[in-house]
Length: 115
Image (tube, rainbow, N blue to C red; front, side, top):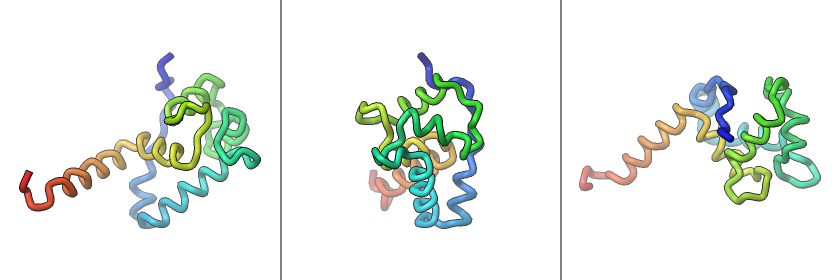
């Protein structure tokens, strides 16, 4: 099952970072996680994502699309997203943020052009 089911996300992250700064942006990501998480379990589950997806304007998502989102970000295989997995997934879904991250990594590894 391919998990890129045609759900298209508009990438607002670069504009948010410009407006909020890095710390403000990370705070907003954490707020987004708390909005979507299951309050009792402290993680985003299939049920909590399905119940709260409308808060992201994604009320029309199918169960398969929701499950694909979870699988895409579930790094430890427990079937849910903790805060770190959620933030990592959000960065991976943002092409502009990934490019910026790549550029920063290259810059950090090649401090004086010695590589």
